[in-house]
Amino acid sequence: MKRADLHTHTTASDGLHKPSENVRMAAEAGLSAIGITDHDTVAGLNEARQAAKTYGIEVVPGVEISTAQDGQDIHILGYYADDRDRVFLARLASQRRVRDSRNELIVAKLNELGVSLSWETVLDAAGRDRGPDETVGRPHIAEAMVRIGAVGSLQEAFDRYLAEGKPAYVLPPRIAPAEAIAWIHEAGGAAVVAHPGLYGADEAVESLLRDGFADGVEAYHSDHTAEDERRYAAMAERYGVIATGGSDFHGERKGRVYHGPIGWRSAGADVVHALRERAKDRRAARLSDSPAGGGIASD
Image 1 (cartoon, rainbow, N blue to C red):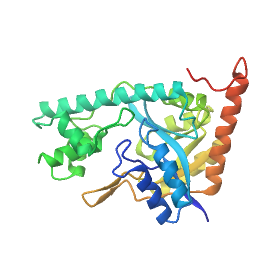
Image 2 (cartoon, one colour; image 1 turned 120 degrees about the horizontal axis):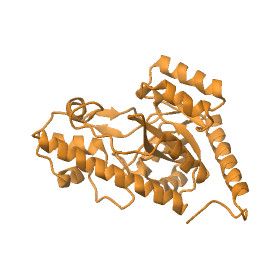
Image 3 (cartoon, rainbow, N blue to C red; image 1 turned 120 degrees about the vertical axis):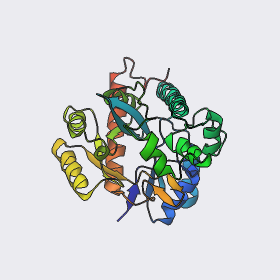
């Protein structure tokens, strides 16, 4: 059966591998499709699409948008949105500015806690000259902490400092999940609630499905238990939305794969088709709502 890993990250955000490498690994894993879903950016999609021609698999264009509701961090995956739409790109750029501010606040908190870490060290840990559309994340900060000897591993960095509820954790002002879903819909894409099992907020997740906002929920994820997967698959069926799956692959650091290897969690080809069709419906609705029937807003 054809399978697709619909959730992976690349060097365009906080992944370790280039988009073309993710595509290659997906092909080697026997997948027929791979989702490229970097945080608040679509900068990796063009490289991935070029690689897909070489390796003979499909790239599902995506993005993962950071949001918050009632103090809870919630992520929304967007699939098949128009990644050339200028309004959508400007909105993602605003998200990246929030992320940059959060990162600077984390570094400042670490300094207050006695961890002498500079922003330049974090950028060096990212391992590249960051492009204007690329992002830096907490794994890069954790890697920088390992390099200066503040912690012995990335896991220790999160357990002691960076995870939610820890001394250097920062939750900046975020847009609400419903707003991110609206952005994705307005760009002609399908919106999916990412890894709901990580939130401990099933009521909030269910409300996004029940009230007709989200098009799907990521039932199958590397950090979900078997019970989580059954619960969210049932939730998707109950509200008539799409149950998706993905590894949330970020690459291997210090011998550990975060969150799982490519293909560790996946979805069937029917799910890819359903997402594509739902995105087509969103684009059609957007066209019909346009006063001149002229297409998706682009300025």
